[in-house]
Image (cartoon, rainbow, N blue to C red; front, side, top):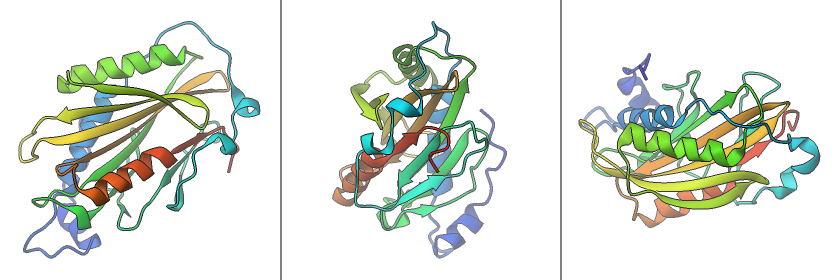
Amino acid sequence: MMIARSDGSAGGAAMLGVTPARPLRWPLVALAGLSVLAGCTTVVTGSAVKDPGAATVASWACRAVSAQLTSIARKSPAEPQLRIPQPPGWRRFTTLDSKRVWYAMANDELASAGFPPTVVVGLESVPDATDPQRALEQERAGLRRSLGARELTVRPTTVCGYRAESVTYPAPAIGEIPAREALSLVTVGTFGGKTYVATVTIQSTEPGNPTYARDAKTILTGFQMLPPGSG
């Protein structure tokens, strides 16, 4: 996928309060997360399934976390409402906002060798109601295809009652960006006869950092996908 904006590193560094002497390269790391996000999204085909709708899934089915929740702006009232925890130190940046990237944030305080951990959130839709398991399988296939990832650790889970998977994998070095560990949470929900796939990808060059590990768990555990009209 082509990135419309790949400059902005100076402005982004200034926004994060980073001195020019040692700028953080969070846009580069986030761009790598974007390539993963784009590679994971595929056109899903399959048989129609029942739309769970707002009647069967509600906010009480979501997992509570201590961090404040940020509502991600929707592009259409028919789309699900996404919410993401924002632990202290994580800052929103808009450099990569696009049709595929709905939300991104980084934590410069946890940077390792100038590369801070980043989170990238995306949402894609399929025209009809599609079997969630098939959608998840095709997301994994896209991940293998885009990165050549073979060592995938997949854990089935749910997000606010919707079918989901967390996928942990080693992301290879790309140019200046060193190898890092990435974790993607993929959630599938059907609303109004259309299937939506939300992807949250968080990555770090120092996954063993205890603060990062705690924050990553908070972000992925507390992520929400809610029916349209949930506010």
